[in-house]
Structures are given as C-alpha cells and as structure tokens.
Amino acid sequence: MAGEKLWGSPEDEARIGESEARELICEIGRRLWLKDMADCNAGNISYRLGPDRVLATPTLISKGFMKPDDLVVLDMAGNQISGTRQKTSETRMHLGVYAERPDAKAVIHAHPRHVLSFAITNTTPESCILTEVEGTIGEIPMVPYQTQGTADFAAALRPFVKDHMAFILAQHGALTLGRGLIEAFWAMETLETYCAVLLTARILGEPKRIPSDKMAEIYALKKRLGIPDKRA
Image 1 (tube, helix red, strand yellow):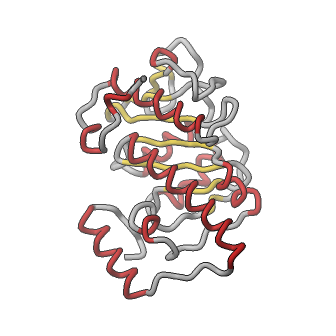
Image 2 (image 1 turned 45 degrees about the vertical axis):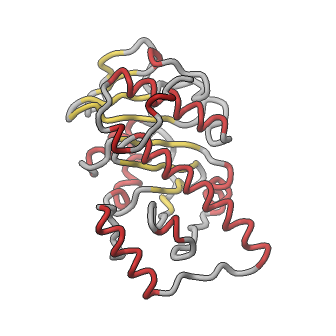
C-alpha cells in the first residue's frame, strides 16, 4: 500500500524527504477519497519542502488515484517549478497559510460531507463541547465566502489563520493545517467527525458545554504540548 511504511506519527514524519512526502500525500489523498471527503477531483494537499518550495497536488485529478509523479512543485510566489501536470488555482490559499504560519508544514483542503452541512448554512460549530476536539483543533471559525481560486478567496482566510488550525469555508468545504501531513490529516478527520457528531446529537437535545474550569485544564495541557489556542 502506498505510503504504508510512512504512516507513523508527526514525529516520524519530520525525518522524511521529498520522495517519501510524495508517497504520503498520495496515501492521504486515497484516504480522503475513501472517507467521502474528496469526491470527484475535489480538494488539494500541499507540503512545505523548504523555505521557498512547496509540493502540491495538481488540478483536475482524483485524490484517490494519484501517483507520486503527478504532484507539482511551486515556489512561494505560486510559480510552478516542476511537474508535468498543471497546478491548481487553489494553491493561492495554501501559500497564504504558509506566509502567515511559519510553523505550518502541511495544508489540506477537502469537502467532507458533514462539514459541508455547516458550510452551506453558514453555521459555526459550537466550541467547548467535545474533549478530543478541544485538545487538538480547538475553536473552528467560519471563513466568509469568496469565489474559489481567486486572490479574494485566499485573503478571506488571512484574519483567521494565525489563531486556528481547522476552518470551515462558507459554501465550499474545509481546510486544515499542521506541523506535518499526518497532523493536518488528523485535523481534517477530527473536524468531519465533530460535525457529524453535532448533527446527530441535536436529535437528542442541546449539546452540553465543558465547564470553564475544566476547559482551563485543557488549555494548560495544550500549552505544554505546544498547540496554540488563542483562548488560553
């Protein structure tokens, strides 16, 4: 299975080179597709190779069937350096994240089905509800709608990027970032699961919030783990 030997932890990932990063992107793309988070040719994935190079998925390709040679390399201005396929216009969004977040090494954009229910209704998920969410991705903002692939689309993210790692894009989908590809993928999985749980929970009643003193303990834990949270 492509990328199977790489599927360890974010710490293991820190030691991979470009060839292994290509395999891991393809494996993550396959998992996104299998989990109904990237239908058709939706979504894109990128990985910061260095201070001036980004590895990214190209336009018009199913994330479930990519090969390492399908990926393209860009500079930080968005110019394509290598690759036989064409870059996607949504790389502007990825490069904008990297410009604002030096700690981010990977960005994933997808269209998870339950997240889309929140996106198309402009409903921001409640915070302080589920421990696993608060201990990882934290508060989830709703990014105002702009036409995809445009400079305005990338700019709409800018006010939110420094303080969050998971975002819902109004009328569009989701975006997550991480200190590596695995962390960014875990964030996307967590976001989709949380949205699904919230939708189901509302059948039973109003979700209950974690008490503020217990949230303070979560913030303290995140600080020790080096996970930023502006609320702390």
